[in-house]
Length: 465
Ligand code: UD1
Ligand code: CA
Image (cartoon, rainbow, N blue to C red; front, side):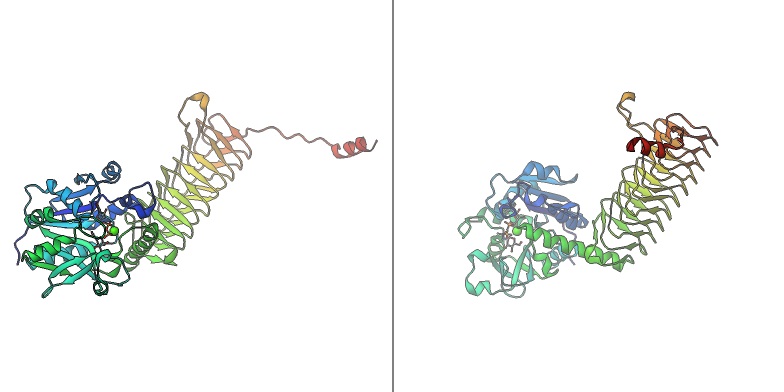
């Protein structure tokens, strides 16, 4: 039993990422709504380390701005290798004694379980320098783990510096390490750049600790996919697909039905309840919440949206909206921010809603734009209705429309805001409503129809004379 030791985490994120061929720092490339670095931080977060230090360098201002509160940063001025990056973190570790978990900032596939296994192995075996070793394909350009007696590591050799015999070793360095803080401080200044890349290698710290006679350890944990660092955009696509699959597998095992999962994308921040059903081509992002029995898709994208039990969203795009119990959306609806459909409400085909509340059992079934509007209960909006909410002559903001309960608007009604329709009001088809309509009244606001008798006959006579 090891006494509870203090833990700090250092994430190396100063590298330029030249092979990405991008102006954006490598660790800031987005994957499923998080940055690469965000994935690494999410994996180590449950370890509840006393200090989390991110080493920045290339694009440091942008990287620092992306970090959550509570993360400390250290700057590596010149990118002289991963060993030099650890050196840059030492000032932020001043006064710290205990263990330091050091993690490559480009390992988006690292899992919390694997990080735990490294720390637990390191602490339970009394190691002073530990590395995560994963058996993998010898064609991969990763560091080779040279084993010592028992499960020790004698040293790690980078692929670029390895002999053919060393290159045949299939235990690969995954870029996760644990060090005793004092051992780390003692070994870092002794790193040399006498190697194929002329860089200071963090990996050489294992060899230094071992030759000093300290207890080193190679922990075998995790899956082969955790070896995948991100170095090119090809890696981004491969890693994104693996993370996407991981999320969907967890959802399915928790009781969510997913049809054709290879076409479905759910970001890690989304919550989906058991017995919800995601159909092909569904994309769920941000803080989206889906309740039991809801059916989403096919071909729908929901961002920061809450869907209550039993609601249906078919072939639609929805942003920052709330869709109530058993409500119906689509096919082909566009719901924009701050839209709320209450229970049993409907936003049907080719309907756009923005900043609008649709009350219980009210329907906007076809071809309408309704914005900045409150609709009561049991109201039906006719086909092709428009709220004319932009009135620059009235000032900068959009004007509101208020529609009561049990209202019936005729097809092609234009509601020129600000305007109010009382409870039970009606409008005639084709009306342009510019004045409030009292409760129970019918507003007809269109040109009267005039029939000109015999018109066709007279016109044809004129044409032939
Ligand atoms: C590194 C390991 C290699 C391992 C592989 C796993 C070294 C020397 N080699 O190789 O054994 O198999 O990861 O993915 O570490 N960094 C800095 N400052 C620098 C250079 C790098 O902060 O000056 C950071 C990078 O942002 C990255 C990490 O250190 O997060 C590793 O650097 P990278 O260049 O990606 O090393 P690899 O060649 O992938
Ligand atoms: Ca890498």
